[in-house]
Image (cartoon, rainbow, N blue to C red; front, top):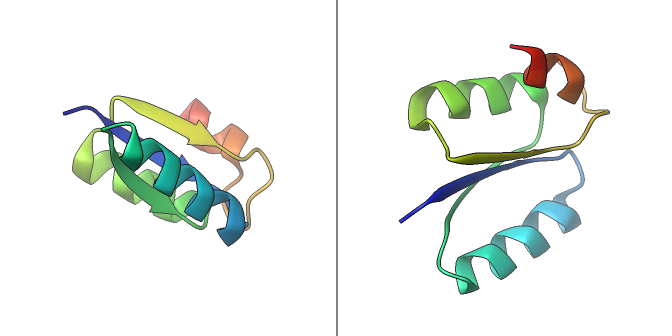
Length: 66
């Protein structure tokens, strides 16, 4: 099963994407901030990352760069 990490500080967005992607058969991880996204990505090695560019702490741009 493929894993997707959804990183966004808007809980409504992450909840909606988690529900939809889970229904479609994906394993979904969520992160509310940039550092949490980096930690999740390092620990779980997702197949795809969906990033919000403007997150608290470490920005989505910086997450993508790393």
